[in-house]
Amino acid sequence: MNAWQCLSITALVCALGMAQSHAQETSPQVTTQATNEDNARSAVVAVADIRLEASPRVSPEALFEEVTELAREKARNEYQQPQSPLPESLANLDYGTYRDIHLRKDSALWSNEGLFEVQFFHLGFLYDTPVDIHVLENGRIEDVNFEMGMFDYGKKAARVREEFAKLDQRKLGFAGFRLHYPLNTPHRKDEFLVYLGASYFRVAGRGQSYGISARGLAVNTATQGGEEFPAFRSFWLVKPEPESSTVTLFALLDSPSVAGAYRFDIDVANNIVINVDSHLFARDDVAKLGIAPLTSMFLHGENSFNRHDDFRPEVHDSDGLLMRTSSNQWIWRPLSNPQTLNVTQLRDTSPLGFGLMQRDRDFENYLDMSANFQRRPSLWVEPREGDWNEGGLELVEIPVDSSVNDNIVAYWVPDGEFRAGDERRYQYRLSTHGKNLPAQELGRVIRTRQGSSANAKDAEPPPRTSRRFIVDFRGGDELASLNGSQPVEAELTVARGKVSDLEVKQLPDGKTWRASFKLEPQNKASADMQLKLKLRGRTLTETWSYIWNSNVVQ
Image (cartoon, rainbow, N blue to C red):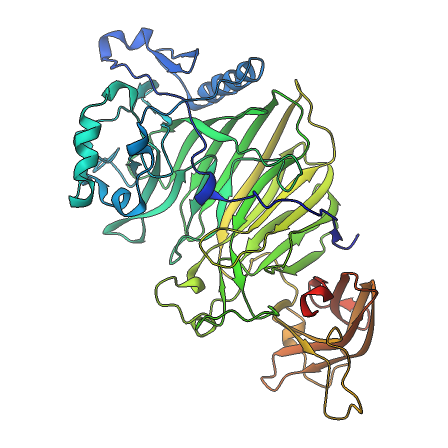
């Protein structure tokens, strides 16, 4: 297995803003028509300039086939840039005003009809272009139409209500929606999944709060030509049975280069599990395709060199990237907030899984009573069927000076070119977790720290670029059972650097094992390191993978 490969991308402008700065990605104007029982047989769902014929009885499977055909047909035609129906004064609402617009409780879809309900987002702020929303119920497709009476407009939003009343209601729609379910208690329907902005969606499991985001697709991320943000233009929600804990929805994705059809089968339990089936159609050549992209934030953590002027010891939604390779090797890559853009890639063929994790669940390491970073979910991707094949897991780390914007992106990049007219299919399972994955039986990295290698015995202090690393491991079926007298060894490889003083010791708690070493970087190049613990040839832990750039201390 190859080590993380640092891709040299210099002078690249970081126009890679995340959901906050790119959620203005547009979606098609909604045209809705009321459909009653008498004319249901001739109902037609309008999506842009293509019509999806709805038969009297449509199954979810048949509907997905039609959405897939709709995406294929869109890719054959010239891209139509959707336009916002809002005047500038409404499209550019400030956050405080937008937050003062609330959906009325009795306006939620499926309210009091079962365990699930759907609440819609009003247009405005970053979300100025509507998405088309439909419901499949009893074999029939119906539109969900916007009405001002569905929302309460607070004092800050009084002007918004007046201006919206002057607009043609038939041309308006919703910015997105969120799903609710009695996840934590039987008496309250908690929000656990939201689709809002481009192809972004966020999910939180039991006892968790929103943090990391997933996306439908990433196109040309971290490239000289700039990133393209595909967007979900239309959704079809399949009404579940009243006592069901699963719900299905379909989505149509579109962008200048790619159109796609998505199926999301959502199972609500302790961990939220979403089975994703995506069909992609290239309208134009794509330089880089990012499959199952995850987006998160890392400002500073235990491994950071520069300490921020912040009372909080750590600030991040995720603290590491985890990968399970096709050869069943587990690799852990701690995240960083670099001084310059970092793009790294781990090569593999049909990986077994990858995800951005929030392993540190201890409040004492964050001390933030508002953000509650210790409750942020980990998201894990398990590739299933489709065109995964050869490629690489790519990690993009963008320098930031605040926690406002996301700066971490991870996705699978297939090797094969995706040219105009090509089609691909990717099926995968996305699930929420806490600090650990049930399938991971090896010892895990719980801490990474680094500092100057100087000590009191040195006649002369070493250069600042000389660093001492400590990597602490804990857990695992075998590692957890060992006492400190066992001859546990560290297997360490490094590219572009010299290592010395490598040793392994058990810590006083009797359950944590520490590997420590000194690193002398080579010619100011980034040192690529891989480390794991072994006992008599048997692997005890996952592989710690880290890239250290000595420029941060110069």
